Structure formats: C-alpha cells, structure tokens
Image (cartoon, rainbow, N blue to C red; front, side, top):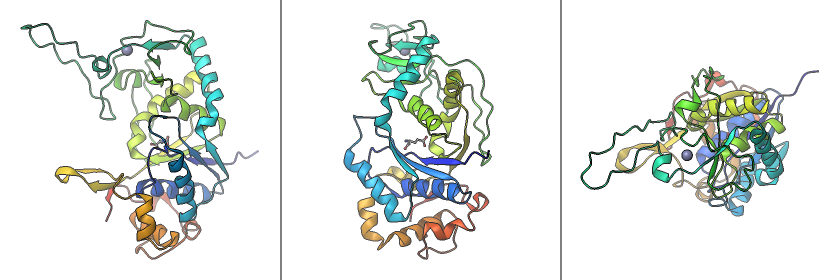
Length: 314
Ligand code: GLU
Ligand code: ZN
C-alpha cells in the first residue's frame, strides 16, 4: 500500500496573518498538491496568553482568500488529551523534571551577582542555535512523576546524542540538542503545553509525512526529532523555506510581522489572485506579479525554483 503524503500548515494564532504566514501556507499547499498529497491546516492556539479566537478565524479566511483549500482543519487546543498522554509516557520513562530556575538562571545559568564588592561572576552563558540562551539542564535531578501537580516549568531530559540531519532543501540541521539548546520545556509554568511537545504529538497523530515551514524554526528541528525518538514516533521529512523580511529599526532586517497585517493586505490587493501573484513572484515561481491562483502554480511547481535566500517585502 502506498501511504499518501500528508503535509500541514501550522500557524500560531497569536496575531493577524501577514505575507510571511501566507507565503508559508502557499508553499506547504503547493508541496502537497503538486505530489497528490493531503494537506491540513492546524491552528496552533495553545498559548492562552497570546492567542485570540479572532486571529484563528482570520487565518482560515486569509487562506481561503488566497485560494487554498484543506483536507482537514485541526484546532490544537482540542488535542489536550493526546498532549497529556504523551507527557504521561515521558513521565513513566523518568524523563520529566521540574525546572524551578529563576528567569536569570533559565537564560543560561549565570550566577547571581555576589554581595557588595565581590568580583563579577563569570559569564558562563552559551548562545543557542536559535539566538537565545541555551538552558544548562541544572534541574535534571528534580524528576517528577506527577507532572500535573508539579510546580514550575516541566522539562524533558533529552538523550545526550547528536542528531545528524539535513533537510530536503539541503539545510544542515545537525545538533546535539541537550547541550546546544538544553532540555526543552514541555509544559510551561503557567500550565500551557509547550510548542515542542505539541508539535511532535500532533504531527504524528495526523500522520504527517512532510513538514514545510519557515527557516526561523529550523533550530528546533533536532530537539523535535529527539522527542519523536523518546515517544517512539516516526520522523517526517523536513524542509525550511526562506523568510520575508522588512527593514526594522536602525535599518536592520527582521522577519516581517505586524506592519503588513492581513486586514491591510485585503485593502491593498483587490482579490486573492493578485496577492497570490505577488507571493509567487517573491518565491521565484513567476517572473511577474501577474494575478494567478494557487491551482495554476501546481503544474510546474518545483522546489528547485523557489527562492533560496530571504527577501525583503516591497
Ligand atoms: N506554530 C509555529 C509558528 O507559527 C510553527 C509550527 C511548525 O510549523 O512547526 O511559528
Ligand atoms: Zn531549571
């Protein structure tokens, strides 16, 4: 039996859709539709401190406006039982521990300043591949069986092994996550199930075979692969695409976010085909921004033609 390829677009519903969101949606959709695959939309709405139902609703509308269709729409917060079951399994394996570090310690274990006059403590912090600070696994001894009632954040002790991984686009993702990133938080201090755990569980339950997502998430992939191994789940194919940037403060280039929300795009672009044409041009799939539909892009879609480097939105 041939297993159908299945992809997913998994936006966090923490803000309005923007060109980067829609580019990702389009590339995920083209990747599957050009190979007769199935493709799901998963609304990642676990972070109750940041999500709004209105943004989930708008994401669905924005994708429809662009001309994308989905074989299923999954709301991540409906999947709590599966996330809890995975945490139970990790707890049974003795992998979960309570991290009671202060914020300062969490950002890499810098010792507290000594009382008046002492020499400044050495700065032992290490930068992680994602630009943040690596967590130094200080709390590993505080193993918890009852993660539901444990105070603090819950982390998962990763095996110390190196993950050797190159994505389908040739991006080198090899890492020793336990050291380079530190053990991931799997349940936050405020009770929210963390992204790293939820993404792995949900991708496996939906039998996702191919993950296409922005390059900003690439540094998390090796951590996710180790979580898959701990849970006995398969590792899908990965591909990380270019990002759309904007000139931010001090002329620095940053990932495009709030300055081009969907509510504005909808005014600037008369219809979905106009916006699709613009994204297709940015992605290197068309020479001009002439209106087109996602369907029209399927026939000659080829990753070899997709822009490799980040582009500035103009
Ligand atoms: N929800 C995550 C985000 O929007 C992406 C999840 C993923 O594609 O793995 O940044
Ligand atoms: Zn800790």
